[in-house]
Length: 184
Image 1 (cartoon, rainbow, N blue to C red):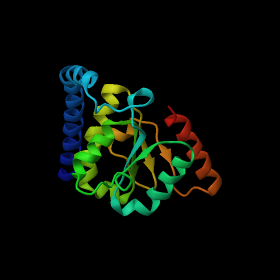
Image 2 (spheres, rainbow, N blue to C red):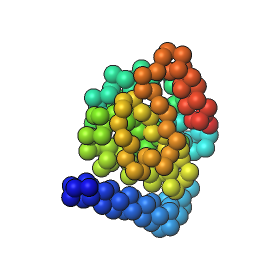
Image 3 (tube, rainbow, N blue to C red):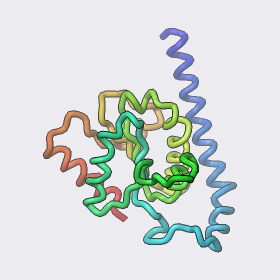
Protein backbone atom coordinates (compact mmCIF):
# COMPACT_ATOMS: atom_id res chain seq x y z
CA UNK A 1 0.00 0.00 0.00
CA UNK A 2 1.28 3.43 -0.79
CA UNK A 3 1.12 6.39 1.58
CA UNK A 4 -1.89 7.95 -0.17
CA UNK A 5 -3.97 4.77 0.19
CA UNK A 6 -3.06 4.39 3.86
CA UNK A 7 -3.84 8.05 4.51
CA UNK A 8 -7.21 7.65 2.75
CA UNK A 9 -8.08 4.60 4.84
CA UNK A 10 -7.08 6.38 8.04
CA UNK A 11 -9.20 9.42 7.13
CA UNK A 12 -12.16 7.19 6.22
CA UNK A 13 -11.83 5.41 9.57
CA UNK A 14 -11.61 8.69 11.49
CA UNK A 15 -14.64 10.03 9.60
CA UNK A 16 -16.65 6.91 10.38
CA UNK A 17 -15.76 7.06 14.08
CA UNK A 18 -16.63 10.77 14.16
CA UNK A 19 -20.01 10.06 12.51
CA UNK A 20 -20.82 7.31 14.99
CA UNK A 21 -19.73 9.49 17.91
CA UNK A 22 -21.92 12.31 16.60
CA UNK A 23 -24.89 9.96 16.27
CA UNK A 24 -24.30 8.65 19.79
CA UNK A 25 -24.13 12.21 21.13
CA UNK A 26 -27.36 13.03 19.32
CA UNK A 27 -28.99 9.96 20.85
CA UNK A 28 -27.85 10.76 24.39
CA UNK A 29 -27.89 14.54 24.53
CA UNK A 30 -30.02 15.95 21.74
CA UNK A 31 -32.89 13.50 21.14
CA UNK A 32 -34.44 13.78 24.63
CA UNK A 33 -34.48 17.58 24.29
CA UNK A 34 -35.92 17.42 20.76
CA UNK A 35 -38.64 14.99 21.89
CA UNK A 36 -39.65 17.35 24.66
CA UNK A 37 -39.78 20.29 22.24
CA UNK A 38 -41.58 18.28 19.55
CA UNK A 39 -44.32 17.32 22.00
CA UNK A 40 -45.41 20.95 22.17
CA UNK A 41 -44.27 22.08 18.71
CA UNK A 42 -46.93 22.75 16.07
CA UNK A 43 -44.24 22.17 13.40
CA UNK A 44 -43.92 18.47 14.20
CA UNK A 45 -44.70 16.35 11.16
CA UNK A 46 -48.19 14.94 10.97
CA UNK A 47 -49.26 11.56 9.70
CA UNK A 48 -48.50 7.94 10.46
CA UNK A 49 -45.29 7.41 12.41
CA UNK A 50 -44.62 11.13 12.68
CA UNK A 51 -42.98 11.34 9.23
CA UNK A 52 -43.95 13.76 6.48
CA UNK A 53 -42.16 11.64 3.85
CA UNK A 54 -41.62 7.90 3.51
CA UNK A 55 -38.16 8.39 1.99
CA UNK A 56 -35.55 11.04 1.27
CA UNK A 57 -33.37 10.48 -1.81
CA UNK A 58 -29.84 11.90 -1.76
CA UNK A 59 -27.96 11.99 -5.07
CA UNK A 60 -25.55 13.97 -7.21
CA UNK A 61 -27.09 16.54 -9.57
CA UNK A 62 -25.39 14.67 -12.41
CA UNK A 63 -27.72 11.71 -11.67
CA UNK A 64 -30.92 13.78 -11.84
CA UNK A 65 -31.99 12.21 -15.15
CA UNK A 66 -32.00 8.80 -13.46
CA UNK A 67 -33.43 9.93 -10.10
CA UNK A 68 -36.46 11.91 -11.29
CA UNK A 69 -38.22 9.03 -13.10
CA UNK A 70 -37.18 6.69 -10.25
CA UNK A 71 -38.77 9.03 -7.68
CA UNK A 72 -41.89 9.35 -9.82
CA UNK A 73 -42.18 5.56 -10.00
CA UNK A 74 -41.98 5.34 -6.19
CA UNK A 75 -44.73 7.99 -5.97
CA UNK A 76 -46.91 5.95 -8.34
CA UNK A 77 -46.48 3.05 -5.91
CA UNK A 78 -47.79 5.22 -3.05
CA UNK A 79 -44.46 6.22 -1.48
CA UNK A 80 -44.16 9.85 -0.29
CA UNK A 81 -40.80 10.92 -1.76
CA UNK A 82 -38.58 13.87 -0.86
CA UNK A 83 -35.57 14.98 -2.89
CA UNK A 84 -34.18 18.37 -3.81
CA UNK A 85 -36.26 18.99 -6.96
CA UNK A 86 -39.47 17.98 -5.18
CA UNK A 87 -38.63 20.32 -2.29
CA UNK A 88 -37.91 23.39 -4.45
CA UNK A 89 -39.33 26.29 -2.46
CA UNK A 90 -38.15 29.69 -3.74
CA UNK A 91 -36.91 31.91 -0.95
CA UNK A 92 -36.03 29.03 1.40
CA UNK A 93 -32.48 27.96 2.20
CA UNK A 94 -31.44 24.88 0.24
CA UNK A 95 -29.40 23.24 3.01
CA UNK A 96 -32.00 23.91 5.72
CA UNK A 97 -34.85 22.64 3.51
CA UNK A 98 -33.01 19.42 2.65
CA UNK A 99 -31.86 18.79 6.22
CA UNK A 100 -35.42 19.27 7.45
CA UNK A 101 -36.70 16.84 4.78
CA UNK A 102 -34.18 14.24 5.98
CA UNK A 103 -35.40 14.68 9.54
CA UNK A 104 -39.03 14.44 8.41
CA UNK A 105 -38.46 11.29 6.33
CA UNK A 106 -39.01 7.81 7.67
CA UNK A 107 -36.10 6.38 5.60
CA UNK A 108 -33.20 7.45 3.42
CA UNK A 109 -31.77 6.36 0.06
CA UNK A 110 -28.36 7.44 -1.17
CA UNK A 111 -27.71 6.97 -4.90
CA UNK A 112 -24.15 5.78 -5.55
CA UNK A 113 -22.52 6.57 -8.89
CA UNK A 114 -19.19 7.96 -10.08
CA UNK A 115 -20.72 11.45 -9.77
CA UNK A 116 -21.96 10.94 -6.20
CA UNK A 117 -18.60 9.56 -5.10
CA UNK A 118 -16.95 12.76 -6.37
CA UNK A 119 -19.68 15.03 -4.92
CA UNK A 120 -18.57 16.60 -1.63
CA UNK A 121 -22.13 17.77 -0.92
CA UNK A 122 -23.33 14.23 -0.20
CA UNK A 123 -20.36 13.40 2.05
CA UNK A 124 -20.50 16.67 3.95
CA UNK A 125 -24.24 17.13 4.45
CA UNK A 126 -26.55 14.27 3.53
CA UNK A 127 -24.49 11.31 4.76
CA UNK A 128 -24.06 12.58 8.36
CA UNK A 129 -27.77 13.44 8.62
CA UNK A 130 -28.85 10.09 7.17
CA UNK A 131 -26.45 8.19 9.44
CA UNK A 132 -27.66 10.11 12.48
CA UNK A 133 -31.29 9.29 11.68
CA UNK A 134 -30.39 5.63 11.20
CA UNK A 135 -28.54 5.41 14.52
CA UNK A 136 -31.06 7.42 16.54
CA UNK A 137 -34.43 6.31 15.17
CA UNK A 138 -33.83 3.06 13.33
CA UNK A 139 -34.54 4.72 9.99
CA UNK A 140 -33.57 2.48 7.08
CA UNK A 141 -30.55 3.67 5.14
CA UNK A 142 -30.47 2.04 1.71
CA UNK A 143 -27.47 2.43 -0.59
CA UNK A 144 -28.74 2.46 -4.18
CA UNK A 145 -26.17 1.41 -6.79
CA UNK A 146 -26.67 2.82 -10.29
CA UNK A 147 -23.08 2.47 -11.56
CA UNK A 148 -20.10 0.24 -10.86
CA UNK A 149 -18.51 2.02 -7.90
CA UNK A 150 -16.96 0.84 -4.68
CA UNK A 151 -19.18 1.72 -1.77
CA UNK A 152 -17.60 3.79 1.01
CA UNK A 153 -17.02 1.97 4.29
CA UNK A 154 -20.13 3.39 5.98
CA UNK A 155 -22.41 2.13 3.19
CA UNK A 156 -20.87 -1.34 3.05
CA UNK A 157 -22.60 -2.17 6.35
CA UNK A 158 -26.09 -1.90 4.84
CA UNK A 159 -28.02 -4.10 2.45
CA UNK A 160 -28.10 -2.33 -0.88
CA UNK A 161 -30.44 -2.16 -3.82
CA UNK A 162 -28.63 -2.74 -7.11
CA UNK A 163 -29.99 -0.99 -10.21
CA UNK A 164 -26.84 -1.45 -12.31
CA UNK A 165 -27.49 -2.78 -15.82
CA UNK A 166 -30.95 -4.13 -14.96
CA UNK A 167 -33.59 -5.24 -17.44
CA UNK A 168 -37.05 -3.67 -17.29
CA UNK A 169 -38.32 -6.73 -15.38
CA UNK A 170 -35.42 -6.54 -12.89
CA UNK A 171 -36.03 -2.79 -12.48
CA UNK A 172 -39.67 -3.48 -11.62
CA UNK A 173 -38.60 -6.20 -9.14
CA UNK A 174 -36.15 -3.80 -7.43
CA UNK A 175 -38.86 -1.14 -7.20
CA UNK A 176 -41.22 -3.69 -5.60
CA UNK A 177 -38.50 -4.64 -3.05
CA UNK A 178 -37.97 -0.98 -2.16
CA UNK A 179 -41.69 -0.31 -1.84
CA UNK A 180 -42.01 -3.21 0.62
CA UNK A 181 -39.06 -1.88 2.63
CA UNK A 182 -40.29 1.74 2.62
CA UNK A 183 -44.00 1.24 3.11
CA UNK A 184 -45.21 2.64 6.45
